[in-house]
Every structure is written in structure tokens, then in C-alpha cells.
Amino acid sequence: MAAPSFPNAPLTVKLIGWGNDLHVEDMSFNPGMAASDDPGTPLNLLVDTGSDITWVAKKGFTAMTGQTPLHRIPNPLEDSQCIDTTIRIPPGTAAQDTHRWGAIYTPGFGASGTTRPIINMGIGTYQTPLAIGIADQASIAGRGRYPVQNGILGLGITSTTTSWPGDNGPYLPLWLQLLSKSPLAKTFSIALDRTKLRPDDYTGTLTLGRLPNTPFPSNAITIPLHYAPSPSPPHWSVRVQLYARVTTPPASPTQKETIVETLLGNNPIEIVLDTGADRVWLPQDIANHYNGHLNGMSPSAAPGFTPQKGPLFPAQAPILQGSRDPVFDVALVVRFVDAKTKDATVVIPAGRLVEPDQSGQAFGHGRVMGTGGMPLLGMPFFLAAGEVVFDKGGECVVVVPS
Image (cartoon, rainbow, N blue to C red; front, side, top):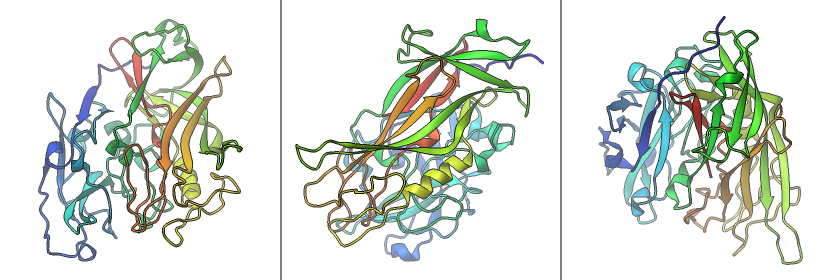
């Protein structure tokens, strides 16, 4: 069996705004209706790709039930630079198959009592309140290593008041990071050396470096690839260990910061480079494992709240009080276990937990925060080593959020 071929250059989608800037249609709602009475209005959301129109949401989507309105979500329109990042999806992803894509519109209320749009999107069979799910036609059709219901979802915003079935409760992957002026992406280069792909025994290597314009940078990390002829289509994969890294800043100048790392999921984890879908997938148990730990936090009396002791947090985690801001810096650590160098590690900064004010509405640029007194951490586990996208020359670009 021959090694898999590589597709043409991917479609690049620029996410440049919110509301009408994202070409949202059918966004009508009743301003006089209380949020608790409005179950959410299905809408159409389409993204202008620059060359054609890609549908990523289907009108009349009803699979997501039990919608709870989101309160005290910062208005992205207040900052013209709030969203400026690039999402990559394979050509024809949603245009060919939209039945698993959907969006729910929910009114949200600000401090002034005004109503503004809050959009929840996700994949109906997964039933999770995510803002934008990253999936692909191949995996929706069941051709990938992990089908959608066992795969990874993408950027998201979530309610803190609803526990959704199947995802161990609410969580915040990345969306609020898009509302900050902080740099959103660090580009790594993954180059697949075709001279090292051996169809006779299906072996190959992956090169990971920090120079996006150099296919094989001098500081690159060489990682063996694993080839599997089945399931169809054949795929390459790498093995990694994923860790949650939580850094607690020192409480005083005489103290040191505390760093705690917790292994997520199985050891090691296979990340499939599905050359038919150009997508990196992780098993669902990683998401569930991570979410279960993340939700080991609960609010207490305002203005502070005490995190419950859990695997992701230090045993003596400080209570958020007064000016102690931030308390936790969170990152995802990806270690390539088969690499030939010990430093084959990618650290993806994921967010900063800050103290909400008495209304639970603290928000500032560069912060990832909780609403309604519930702390949320934005760890983009679903991007793992980034999104792997093959171009015509066999070089991959991996975008890692920072």
C-alpha cells in the first residue's frame, strides 16, 4: 500500500469581527423578552473566505437543548481589535456537510441592562456550548481516526450556569482570548521530509521548529511518525504527552512562584495527522479528563472565590482577594515522546485567571475571566500541537495560540 498523498493548499478563513462583521443572518430577537424566557433563536452564520462563501452553521438547528442565557459577557464591539486571528479549515468543509453544524443565538445583558448578541455554536451530537467548532468534512463522514463525537472542538464561549450533557460541565477554551489585544498566535513550522517517507515500511519523520518560512530550520526537532494503513484513509500520527501547567505567582517578594503540571489523558497520546482531512485530532477522553479537573472550582462569597483543591491546582491555592490579580497562569504543555531531543516540547500559554468584581464581571485586555463568580480557564487542549495544514510542497504550518 502506497503512502498517502497530500492535498492542495488549504482554505484560510480570516475571522475579522463580530455580528454583522461575521455576516450573521437571521439575528432577530425580541428585546423585550427576558433572557430566561428566550430559549435562543437559531441563526445562519456564514464566513467570507475571500474566494467563496463557506457555511458553518445551519438554519433551524435544534439539537442543542436546555440553552441558558449568558450574562455579563463583555461586548466585543467595544474594541475594534477584539477579534483578529486566522482559522484554517479544509476546502469544502461545511459547504458539503452542514447537518452537524449549528448555532444558537442568545440575548446577553451588560452592566447597563442593554441587550447584545451572544452566539453559541457547536456540533449537535456533542451538545456543548461552544462558539465555533473546528471539525472537518472527512471526520464528519467518519473517515478520520476519531469521528466528530470523539474528536476535538474549536474556539468557544460558554455559559457558567449550565451543565451540558457529555462534556462534564461548562468550560471556556479560547474565545475570550480573542477579545484581548494580546498576541494571539505563534507560528511554528512542521515540515514533512518526503525523502524520509518510506512506503515500503511506512516510516517517516516530522520536523518541528520555530521558523515558519524555513522548511527544515536548524533548531528543528525531529519526531518519528507512525504510519497506519487503516482505518481508511491511511494516516500518519505522532505520540505526545499532554500536561496542564498551572503557575501561581508568589504572594510576596520573599516567595517563589509555584508550578504544577498534571498529565492529561493516557500516556502517551496518539495525535493523528489525518492527511485526508488535514486536521489534528485527540481522543475525547482528553477533553473529558481536562474538563473534569477544570470544573473542580466553585464560587464563594463576592468579591473573591476559593478554588477547590484539585489535580490542576496547588494544594494551598491562594484565595482571590483585593489586588491579587492574577492568581493562576495556565498553559498546555505538549511533549513529543518519540523525539530525538529532550527539549521536544511546545508550551501553549492558555490564559490567566483573574478576580471578578462583586457582579462577577471583571474583564480586561489579556485576561481570561469567569462570569457570575465562576472562574474559567482557557486551555486550548483541542489545538494540541496546533492545526496541521499541508500545502502543495508538503510543508505544514502549525498555528499555536499564545
